[in-house]
Image (tube, rainbow, N blue to C red):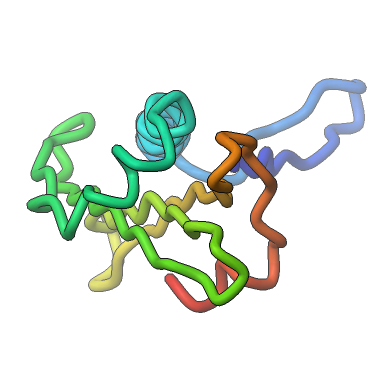
Length: 119
């Protein structure tokens, strides 16, 4: 789930409103999500709380975690949750990707409002 945030300029071009390192981090999180979408339902079902991945993105510490939650309708909700230290603030940037995997191996989108549970 990549959110492109740009501001139009008077000359018709656009200006990015978040740092390049955040765009890179979001791309990494999205790539992890794409890899997970290719796994089978049973593989994901047995992916019990894998250890968080610690990495550095353009000199900024970051962590990526994978969350797999069984749902009442038999599906699995899979979320890739990333946190990266903000450069100038004491907080952190959040990057998220998520989807539903069903027993028949189909993949469904995760509604945007569900992502608020993970930031």
